[in-house]
Each structure stands twice: as structure tokens, then as C-alpha cells.
Length: 233
Length: 233
DNA sequence: CGTCCACTACGGGAATCCCCGAATAGTGCT
DNA sequence: AGCACTATTCGGGGATTCCCGTAGTGGACG
Image 1: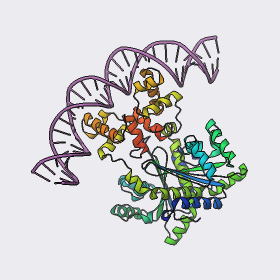
Image 2: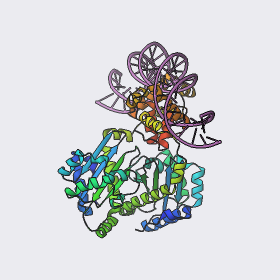
Image 3: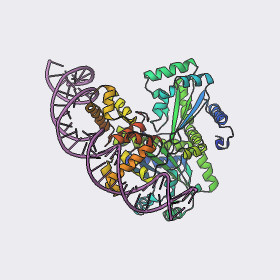
Image 4: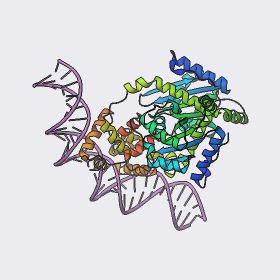
């Protein structure tokens, strides 16, 4: 299994696309797609081997908001075979359109997570018999896992600068207190834990809200988690 | 590659240990160890193939606080080969003791992350020549990745609180209100928007908290966002 | 058909949070 | 040194949220 050095790519878009095409050839897949979300930087990376027509159609209809393959695998640790997805309205909606573009609903999505709340999703699909699919998947699942880690690692490291630049600058005290709030502690509790007045705790929370442009503490916690500043607990 | 159904284990400790021993046999390793941390549930799972004497020594000296293999891989996306670890004082300290127990410093740690900030670390090591190590690792890295995902997935789902968190069932009204809260609206605002009493809004929030096992609304919002029930805004 | 349970809905009063003002200490710039 | 800015600390008092109790409705089940 050959790994491309994705980091040194001068033209990343082309490089990643080429990588995915090679991945398809190697693992006998029709298509491959990678989606990487870095909430800390507010960036989203997408690379696909699909045609531009399907890409345009997907973006136009905002399918990323309802796409069940993204929704499920974002919540999973293990790879998600599309056959195990609920055949809901959203599923029918997306895959009915997909089939019009010659894309089948037999696929697999491998989720990868980094330490900053960043998520990478590597999806592959192939139009073939159910038995053949199972056999192919069984053979390449481990390599796919490695590929997913490799591409996500590469993408996130190429994006490191923007992550640092766009990181909201909360003070350590503010992060500390926000983390306790997300852990379900009251302001009084936190004051006791940190041995300061609960009034002071509230001031730090206020400045956190200001910096995150949040109207309420729950909203601030939501944004802090989405930004990878704190972890849910 | 055979996967044990870890979920149906009557005696989990024994089952996981047996799984790790099989993993060693299959991948030609001396030892294997898994450590899983779930901050949402506040639980830590550990399973190793090391002897009880080293286990006791490790715990006694609180090595988990300084162990560089844990420290580095907690911050990495890709697997970490121990040869790339900095030979710091902590490294010397841990591995000097380890060698006294017949454990070598040639190993690899594979990190896996779930959607709740939960981390699983699967480590393997083997005493052999550097060339042989590279060859062995190259052959099994993909399978190790799959194994790490499999065991972490299994451990997290075997945990009671984790099970609840991974499969919450909020009513549509509860999700709707939680989404407004995450958008920074007050209970009064939401009541006006939905044309119901703000008291009722609070009841829905309370049942949302209950279902998500959250002590406060901010914590509930954090968990709801973390598992994709609502979107940050 | 009655029972149980989940969802929806409302209100009183206590607990908590949030807006206001205020003080001290450190940091960087002129 | 003087100034501006931020981080950290604290308190009063009004606004908001939260706990407890109550109640109607509709679906599931023996």
C-alpha cells in the first residue's frame, strides 16, 4: 500500500483528488469522497471523485445538512456501512437524486477524529452484488481505516495555521470555567472548586459570552464545543 | 481477520484480556494494552496483557500521569511509533522500570476518538530488531487500526451511561426547544415563538436534561451538539 | 376496557443566573 | 512615568431559570 505525501502538495485540491482516484483503483471502488470539518478554524474541506454535475447538485440542494451518511458517521466510532442506515425520508431524498447521477447506495463511511473536535469522513461506494461488496469491504476495511487517518492527518496539518489564527482567545480562566459549566456545575459550585466568589465566576462567564458573541451561557457552551475550545462531558 | 463479539461478554474483564492475547498471537506481538477514557461518563477502562506485577508497579507509581506513550498519542490523529517519542526524563523513568519487568521500548500506540471526547488507546510492543519491527508494523497497521476501533466501540457501548448518550431519544418538541436555547433564546422568548407558556418550555428542557443525563441546560446543549441532535448557532 | 406511560401544558415559589458598578494587578505602548 | 487595555476579583438586586405539583391527551399493552 503506497501512501502519497499529501503534505508537500503545491496544489492541494488536485493532489487530494488524485489521491482519492488512486484509492478507488487500488480498492476497486467506483467513487471516494472525503469531508473534513475543523470547527476550531471554521473550515470545511471536501474532496470527491464524483463528477462536477453531482457536486453542484449536492451543494445547490444543501444535501450536507440532511445526508444520512454524514449524519450517522459523525456520531459513530466504527465505520458505517450504508446498508445499516435507516431508510428515512432524507435517505430516499438524497439517494434518489444520487442514482439519477449514476451513484449507487452501496457504500461505507469511515469516521476519524482529531484531538480538537475535528472530524474527517472518508466514504467509498461501489455498484455490485451484495456478496461481492461484503467480500471487498472485508478485504480493505483495515487499509481504508489507515487511509482515512492519513488523509485527515494531512488535511488538518496543512490547516494548522488557520486553526491557530482563527482560534478565539479566551483566557485560561475563562476556558477553565466554561469547561466546568459544560460539566454541569453551577456558578456556586465552580466558585467553591476554584476557591473564588461565584460573582467572579459569573464575570468570567460574561466575558466568555462576549468573546464568543453568545447571548446566553448555553449558546456559549455550544460554540465553545463546536470550536473545540472545550470538550463535552 | 476474526473479530470477537465483545458486546455479548458475560465477564468483560476476562473477555477483553483474552481478546488482547489473541491479538498478540495474530499480529506477532509480545504485549497489547488498551486504555479507554470517557469524560462524559467519567469512566476509565484499562485492559492489558502485561503481568500483574508490572500492572501493580505501574499503578503504584501513577505512571499514567507521565507515560509518554499515552501523552503523545492523546494529541495525535495517526498512530504513534514509540521510536518517535522524545527521550525525555519521563520516558527514561517509565521505560527503565519497564525493562526491569521484561518490557521493551519498541512499540506503537493507535489512538481512536468517539464523538464525546472519548479516547481509546491501543498499544502493542515487541522485542525484535528494528528492521523486523518495521516490517511487522507495515503488515498489520491497517488491521491494528480496525482492532482499535472495534475494541473502543465495544467498550464505549458496554458502558451504561455511554449507551444512553449514544442513543438518546428526544421528542421533536424537546429537540426544537433545545435548538432555540442553543441559538441564545430565553425560555420566555421560546414560549412566545412557539406560542406556549414559558413554564412549558422549562418542562421540555427538564426532560431533555433527564434524557441526556445532564445536570444543567448548558451541559445538555453541549451533549446535544456533540452527538448531532442540534446544530450550534 | 382499564391501566400505564410518554408527551404536552400550566403555575407558585425557591434557587440560580445575569446586569450593573467597582477595585486591584499586570502588560504593552508612547 | 503616564496611559490604555486586559485579567482577575468581589457585591447588590432584578431577571431568569429550576424544582415541585397538577392535569389533559393519545398510544401501547394485557
